[in-house]
Amino acid sequence: MLALLVIGFVIWKLLIAPRSLREADAHPAPQIQLATLHGPQFTLAKHHGRIVFLDFWATWCEPCRLSMPMVERFARKHPEVDVIPVDVGEPRGLVAQYAGQHGIDHVALDNKSLAAAWFGVIGFPTMVVVDRKGLVRATWPGFNPAVELNMANAAAQLR
Image: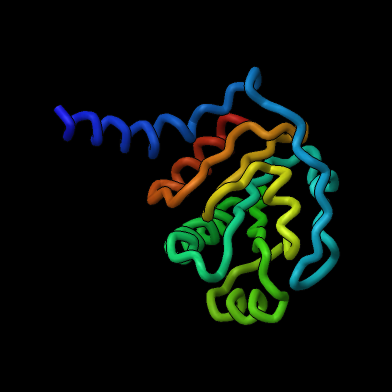
């Protein structure tokens, strides 16, 4: 019985919960502005009209290291959505070195952890899904080996 409960929880966590994008549960995304490693400042409001995935992470986070290649692969395959890796609480130099070594693009820097707090991030990695209207439609905390599938499903539902 315990094994069935565990299997049921895993299925819910990986496949069902991330698909819950009910508009009734949506709320306005905080209007954040963050420095980036390269290029102009990231301003969430400038992405209005596009689906945005904010991937909160840190270089010391082992589950983030496992998740990041999948998230980056999704970003490269789906230019119709914006995937923004948001490093939380670390110095620019450390993040730049890590991003360069691991091929991570479009990194935003939340060096004071304010954006993470505004989005209710309590652990890493955490993916926040923002729809075209600027509403937070889902928050997926923790490592998810099906993150690419969940991102694809969310993008398809929110089109």
